[in-house]
Length: 88
Image 1 (tube, rainbow, N blue to C red):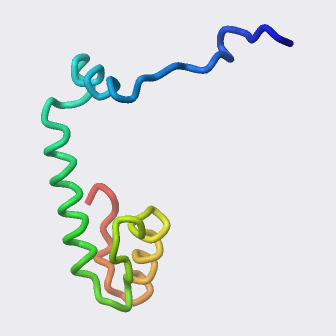
Image 2 (image 1 turned 120 degrees about the vertical axis):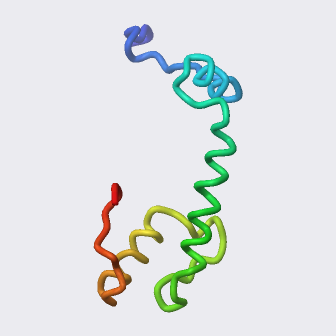
């Protein structure tokens, strides 16, 4: 079938303009880059504070969901988890 249905057509997104579009429509705050940098720095501080036997993540490439989940599992097994969830 050479003709695709309209709902099956790929969306052409210009990622360079996406964040501006989201800010214009108030879906992202104007200072989203600053906020993201703050979250990233807090995350790195938390990773650096982990005991060496819990986390061996030393570079940004190693900090992925799987690595963080593995570190959390090790913390729970070691009894070092505070028992707090995502929302505190």
